[in-house]
Image (cartoon, rainbow, N blue to C red; front, top):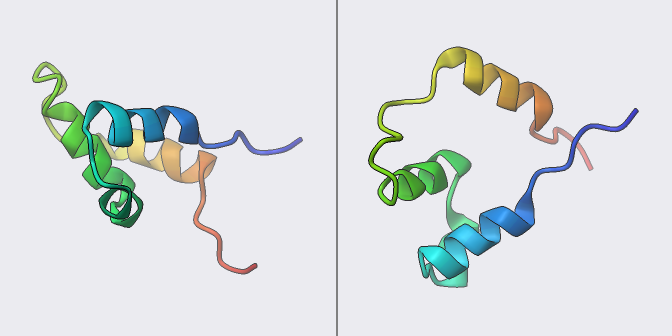
Length: 67
């Protein structure tokens, strides 16, 4: 069973299309930075991510430790 893939198409649409970030800026951003930029578009999504939500994301999309 493979891990779910990160939704890069949606992330790129948000960053490059909706937010109109330059590609260099988009690719240098961390996911928390992209999420913060997205929240500016939706003020109802205020507040930091809960620890449990973060843990779920880290489990679903772990950082690679080797190639």
